[in-house]
Image 1 (cartoon, rainbow, N blue to C red):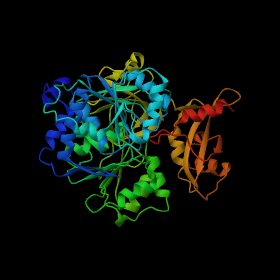
Image 2 (cartoon, helix red, strand yellow; image 1 turned 120 degrees about the vertical axis):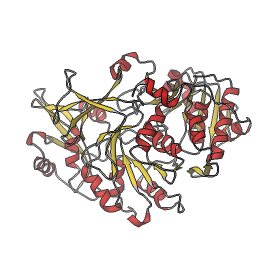
Image 3 (cartoon, rainbow, N blue to C red; image 1 turned 90 degrees about the horizontal axis):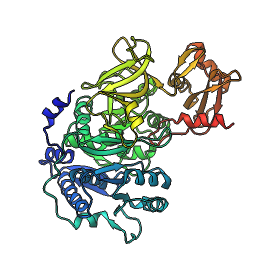
Image 4 (spheres, rainbow, N blue to C red; image 1 turned 180 degrees about the vertical axis):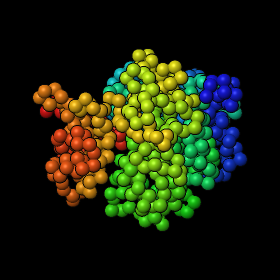
Length: 526
């Protein structure tokens, strides 16, 4: 999709926040968001967005300056995010599970002029601000849990103090819209710059085009709004069709998720659930798994990492609904390769989302034939502009119209794609590529295994051998020899893990992705 075509669709002037409010102008009384404290209808949402924008401008924050958004999922979150965009100011949405040191780094590198923060996270923010120089002029606190310092203002007071700004900032489709940080699976997170147009395209191509969301849906995402996946699930997609969103501040444990599935009144129970494979595995292993007739789900979506076939099949057997597995990235903002509702090929990541092009390239940069592993490249209208302040990594990832994903894939004869691991996680054993994910997916098929992670470990000769870290289900047992034999029976013999270590918990990012680099670090320091 060319820039010219995008301009024809969106026009020379396009503000994403204004776009969403215009779409829902006729739904003023309909509930947009539900959180633990109450709900927010579309009319009040628009009013608060405009008042928030006016407040930021009154505070002296100018166009394209950054504001940090350190907030738990609640009704104030979309107000802060869209209010910033409405004013032409750039919200920087950040992970709420990080340390003060991480936030100090983000404040300094984003040069944030203001911070929107949840009351529960205010002490961590204050610790971050004390660590290093920053440019913060204003602290706006949502759901305060204690008296506020003089430098801070409660969000409801901040909004009430200002009249609604009637005109959105004159922004163009390619103007800076917001920043997202990568999940940090390898070192310091990268600052990914997205435009005003990018969320429009993810909503059109995946939210509407693949999932078929409508205003009758109630969306609930385990992935939080500060993640690219969660931002689409809980904001861009539902607001693009006038749907309702359930927001949850706490961790998406199985019990917390089940509570939202079953305890809300009729009409407010989620119809679409967005999760990740690790979360689905935990729910299916829970003794509190609700019955099919206790939920209102019509479909589930999964991303973040490849979904093992057995997991999807088991979920569908219990609930009678598909898990539509796909893959996206912070760089592409959302899913670009996906299975289809009613046409799911479990064990694959499906087909390219219409509007996106996919290429698999070998080490020589040339396309690889079907059945061979290659590096995944994507071309599509939602690609980020760059990594802010990181030219080298930007040039490596954003290569003209194409974005290098860092994932290895195989294209199957039916046009579907099968995940083979991260480029930096692929193992070459005896001169042959071995996918850690393939071995992991096989291990978790064993009745006693809850989770598994596979890395490469060098032997005395400096040759790479596979090692598996395994988490067993509660009350279950298995031996190393038993699991090795189990894998040998199901995969080519050279793929079985040469050693297995049983551990209580795998290291993961906040999105549930396994941090294999931490396991590799463990091996180095043994």
